[in-house]
Image 1 (cartoon, rainbow, N blue to C red):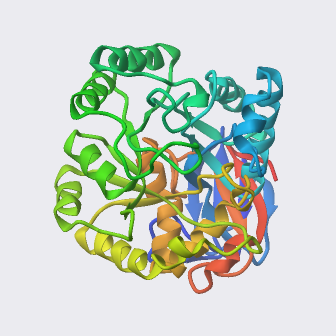
Image 2 (spheres, rainbow, N blue to C red; image 1 turned 45 degrees about the horizontal axis):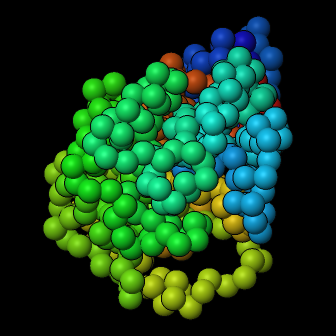
Length: 389
């Protein structure tokens, strides 16, 4: 048994902190949470002092196969499988050191991330718990085609989903629109017809798999919501000239229970955002408030790996970015823990510090409910009951 002590604890739901908690861990799970510094007999003690305990962070959107270089596509396509798997492992360890104990990987090559998923299931120190999609479905020369997930036509996309189910993926990822990372791809245009999108959702749900849509633009979000997708990645309602948080689409998201995986945050010190992005920020802040008011469930992903400012291990900067975009620290922390776990299909075992949950913890300096930047000061990380960082 391991007993973890701290100055305070946020349990993943709030609203406030538990003072002087002791978290009892046995066989990789939380056995009990005791307030008030109660004495513990027969357990190893891990005392993190003045730090605050949080549930281990859950990153709903990452790409472990991308190395956050200035040429992620070239580096990926030029690497053999062994080299790429080594990079995936390094990315996973960088995420773990930043307090991320669970990742949902939404785009690899050759299902390599599933290999690491098996390794981290055996050894918590090897990296976060992994929820894996394998190569995302896309069209010929469509967004991220170089990952090998090309599938077209109703029969073709059904076959692609069946392949992923047979491989053992946890979620099906679809490039509903194009994306900026892929030359020649249009992030504002829908890549698939409605019949294909319906077929993907139907086949995925037949195999018990959730299905999530890459869609920055309102055009793709509308199609994904209409055809029954479970989650929208990015979900910023962009148009070619600005932002359009379409209230009819938002209403459908609420009615159908479609969730949003927001990809916010970046390392400081990078170049300023391009002018066409910077001018959209006030509208994005207002639009995210509209999503909150409508009751849309939102969690936090990093999209780590795609750019140097999105390096693996940068996830805590997404938490502080959420507060810059109008969320309270408590809302941001829930988006990074309990809500994120729910979106990843792990709401019954991760994202909270409570009896019966996996013993995934991160200790941070200070009080993140009053100053969200405390999440950048990671003091200790426990995954599966093992101190790993």
